[in-house]
Image 1 (cartoon, rainbow, N blue to C red):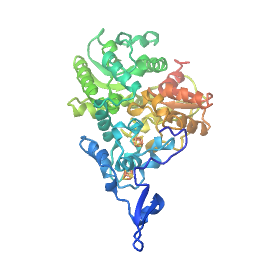
Image 2 (image 1 turned 180 degrees about the horizontal axis):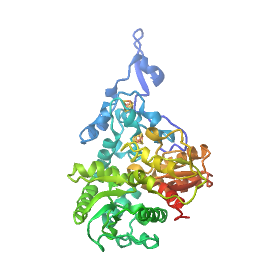
Image 3 (image 1 turned 90 degrees about the vertical axis):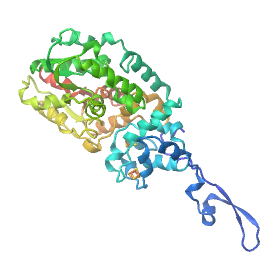
Image 4 (image 1 turned 135 degrees about the vertical axis):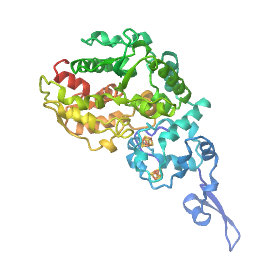
Length: 432
Ligand code: SF4
Ligand code: SF4
């Protein structure tokens, strides 16, 4: 049910009328809901048990039943800020007969993890949602735009449906040589896993080129897979396509097995999450780092060429921060750049707001629009503008284009959006 920006109570499945027999006259009287509970207390068995029965049989979804309704998860849920959401509300809906597997609510969770952080019962939406979505997929219940992304990923190995042969095209304008392993095999220290948005999206490509110049200047021994790279697939997994994810794991690890490297470094916190949490569950262990973790310890080796007179605020990516506990590496880099003033937003670090792109949300903007008052990225851009910063700094490939769009749609076009690596590159006088 679209809420058009107004919060509305969930549709209750309960008796609205009761027929009560008078103990004196014996006459039957019809009573509306506000009175009938006094005479005939409502019990949960009045609601269909199907909702929970369906979820209970899904491995991973059991913890929704552990909810005892304390409500701590609701105010921290980024979707509730722009709509009606949170595990407690979902629990209540399922409890009162809703079939989550065919409900639009199934697709609104961004798997940001903020509810799990505060939940005393460890109700785990990061397990519940992929399990429930996978079951919905088998029933054919999946938003069209998401289905399209699954198909593109299956066919081309990337969510954008781009030709794999164009994977390394961004390197041509990097201004420094970039080693592509299939062309120049041999041992390398850092295998840089570029992932989809830095490989193909024009704004991502700018950041990829900036990384290349910075890595070159720091004399890092690094290389990429070029056309042999496929997405690591974590967002597809969280969106319910476990089968596709498992197939990607097989393909990716078969490719990686061909090369000799010490570490995998990626700019994508979702890919990073897959490498440190999901690939090991399937028997593939890697020394994986986000690019900010590679560069933060090297910051003293950077030769700065100029000061950047920017007041910036920083958005913690959910899958770098909350999911993997890294809050300091990006801030170490930002604070090291001469001239930069960092102003934190109210919601930051552990309680950072979500850009809306996680858990498949990256591809569901059109869908979620009908169920929220504004996009999560728009809400976040407003928070960023309130700090008085002239720039919103990020370190996740999903975020630059999301926030740039949101800055325009919310009337905050003055707020520039840049990846940290672009600022480092500029302060080393390579960039714009
Ligand atoms: S914090 Fe946990 S137990 Fe409390 S209402 Fe939310 S899901 Fe239920
Ligand atoms: S994971 Fe995030 S978006 Fe999903 S219910 Fe929890 S707080 Fe809300």
